[in-house]
Image (spheres, rainbow, N blue to C red):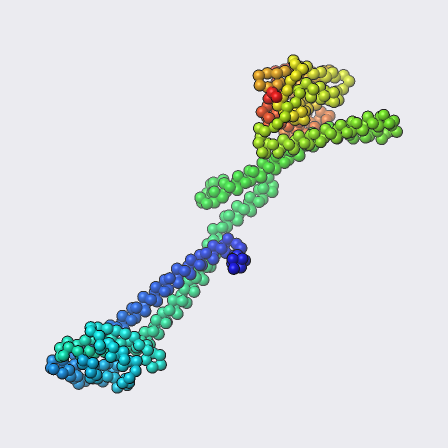
Length: 458
């Protein structure tokens, strides 16, 4: 039964609200119709009783109760007054309507009313199932038992009551139909701004629009809806931005190992190689593939940890060994000399080795690319952290570009001969900040460029 009601329920909000309004109006009109018809029925019954008492009072003027016996006086309107009138004295019938049977429902009802003291009324069903109203009126004087009973056919009154009931039902049906139609029109008009806002939100989310609903010129309910939709659009935009950023960072970081793999394969295919040369090429390709896997794992784990808990990045690493390995595989030109300097042979940071490589790698790559003769990577411990400096003797960063240095997609010179996307430095800073560290540029250093990485001590 519940499933059937669920299937029959309207699917749209407009239909449901219209159904609720129709149900409420139906209940209200049903109650009002019952009250109206009950009130009208009582009013018609009282009107009939008043008519009977007035007729009894008129008949009482033709009854003489001054003597020891009750006498009925003859008058000009005697036949009119005798219609549906019974006169009794102490239970003795003095006069009755000519058409009334001596035994029947009316006679029994008259006897019952005459036996009662004081005024009384009752309703009986006569021949043809016609309701008849009877009222008794005691007469003063005489032996004290004289009673006038008058009868009235309730057919016209019941007909009026039925007509009123039918009219009220027709009026209720018209009112309910009008209520339903007006409710649908009103709800449709009220929900039109919601539909417009929904369409706008869908369009804006699809084209990454910066437009928002705001709270201006909206009712309170729509203001709350607009605020919720604005927050939803902001979350969608943030999720899309993070997705695009992660994709760009992955492509940026994977470019170097992919280039090594392609280069080694091209070199190997130019001419037949010895078994030793083939093994060396395979080792380089395997190392590059392992680096790619570490890059993917590092960036994806960072994305997951940032979403779950930005401060939770477990693991430690030996700074000196990681930096030494990075210098060996940095691919420095013959004229560039790379060196690692450390104040201690044991320096640990509170991040995994793969994440340390991802932070330092963009800085070291840029230093090797722009250095004239040397690249120096130094590490030293400071209270609560480890500081890593990456210094080269190249041209340095132009003063006009320093403010945009860590902004994604920005490059000082797009025609400098390499295919970088301007994502390395922003990625290094983002990863460092995710673990409570920082990446900064020393604009006062000259000549060349100096980048500093600060990471929590392990």
